[in-house]
Length: 485
Image (cartoon, rainbow, N blue to C red; front, side, top):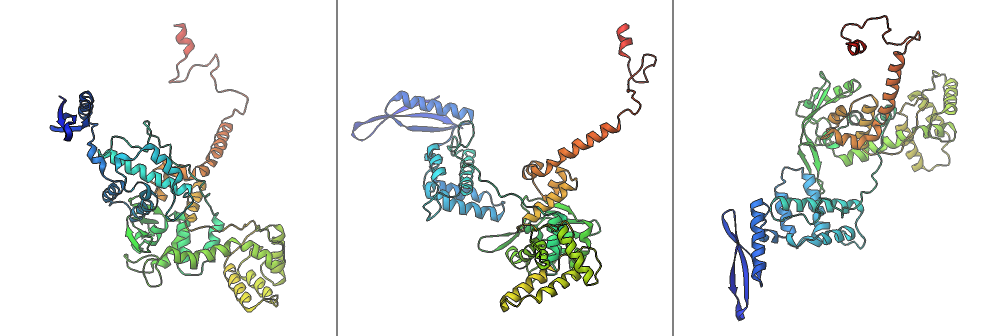
């Protein structure tokens, strides 16, 4: 039972402290001038202890920075890149305002004001909405953990209903980029290194993340079952260090390999030991994203994405970026003039004729311009174009993952199948990420149901109902006869 004790301080001042028991231990409240206030506080604490809600006020005196260090120490199983990003976000955005503040002194108003005025180190303007949103989420998670650890009674960043009103509005996300099968093949054809083509096709048809692709071993590829086992991934830290660890979701999965990739992967395997990396850098180590992007992927994308315009330029036509009937007629004329098969397909032989004619029209160019043009046309000449082909804007390596999702959905794959292929934690994430692609399913569903309904329409004008003279078939109850009984 709660009670009070009288204390006499220096100068004869009198105060009272409440005394109460929690888990068998006798504890004290802070000092009050009035006995009733001390007793009321002791009774509240005692009742909270019985409900399991009591928090020792001294545990909340740990600073936010000290608690962040302790909190991260308990998250050692997280991806190194995740922990590094949290440390950078805390150091640059959270610590300047709350780092030295005790947990119990962080208030809701402080968090709301900080979320709006948050600035990066050495900056005079507020940080971007995305950065502020990530920083607020980090602080909210940090304070939630303090509540779970019984260092705080409640999270000051949340309202009593659990909402976080200070969370900055999410900025408009970059729209996903998708390639068609023809455009993906065009990018792969435009690559110039032996391993770039299978890597682009593998990423564009399976949706593997870069860290997963670069960590594949030859033993992870089973061409008999047409499966790739994904259980490792490389993570690049800010200092350039590559760490080999689990995948993003810490889950092992198998990804189907389209049959068209078998020849490409067979060449890469080439009898190498199962522990060897499937794709490597020049020194035999792991292939780095920035190096592959700069030297192989971006040049191929630039050439393949502008191949139609380049063709129209060589033909002396207005560059529209679409291989239309005008360009098709011009290509056929060139093929006929040079005794090539008149197919309208721009193949290496057709490119060779067009490039040779272009070399005779370079008198006004400098030597450097001639070399640059020759290199660009050498890459474009690796691409095959057919009528209807379109140019496309530059894209990133990660857009190959979006392309794989788009092509899978277009082929009729279910949400669950796409989720398993991409390695998402749940189908909800797949739907949230690619909801727009599944909207076409409604059109197909409507057409399918309409076709099935029409297929069962009567052809003689009769209806599928029982006439008065007929008897009910086995298993069918005649309700009119039951009513008569």
